[in-house]
Image (cartoon, rainbow, N blue to C red):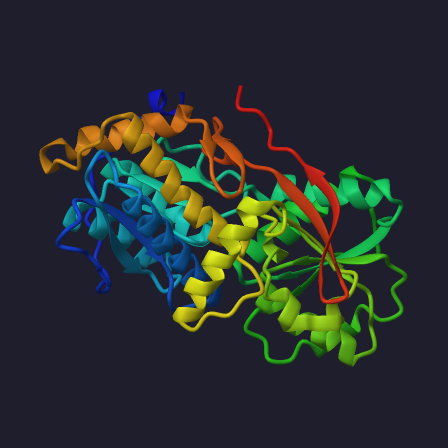
Length: 395
């Protein structure tokens, strides 16, 4: 058990900006959300807030936790790692949250997870996917699959079909997850699986206005795919410049590309692109029902998506996981038992068998959830399933 390996350090005092806190006088058990309604991940993170609120509403509608209602307490980090560390203190110390969903990005997780360990409060990130972010901390969890195993699934699928023999890697040089996917994940995996690379990885600044010089390097390259390290807004910019220059090679990537906004954002420009996701909205009646409910709630706050992002499903399931463990361990929300009940939640998550909208899941020794996976190709304005992968066992 991870919680037997690590001792808590003294709480450090963090200074920073103000937080947005939402509470209800009739609810009794506070659950925190560390997210960014502004900043580089705002378009994705704001939708995760919708899923978080939806989960709390669903749980309260079914009777709450052992007769007590959940309340949401929130902190807008703006995607800033320093603010993510402050969020732990604000939500944990000032708001008395029993657990926190978030923070969102891997850059934020790097500083928030150590802060959570010192505070003794569970954090479940719904979006961080850079390698080995939770394994050193007993209170840290991620309801996601790392980009490494997702990329393995993609490469095996395409290699098995004989479609991926030669590629080039493109990545953002000044974005944590982009650089990690490009250099730490794609580069070694292409080499391991015998994918020939046409050149050294091509880096670009995510803040660059003109991507023409980097795209021009791809001309005349005889390649099957472009391995793209970066989130979908970056991919949209890069692919549009590729098409402007007459380059029609599709991109390929792990879960970081698994954003439904890739469809309206690129349209036919990304025909043939391949990505990974652990949530498939059209998998069964349960996922379709969740998608319909989520889309309706999202539209009420001005967010329009073809279907939920995988990190939206993670935010929803993370709340369900916390609620399940609270019920199983008789959590009361009594302020005098705060530290004790936070530790009970941590210990319960380490052994719980979960079943949310993503499917059956559990947390492994690294703190990352073991989830199913789907490799998708963009075709005719939608996603076509190429391969399906069962979640790994926690036994």
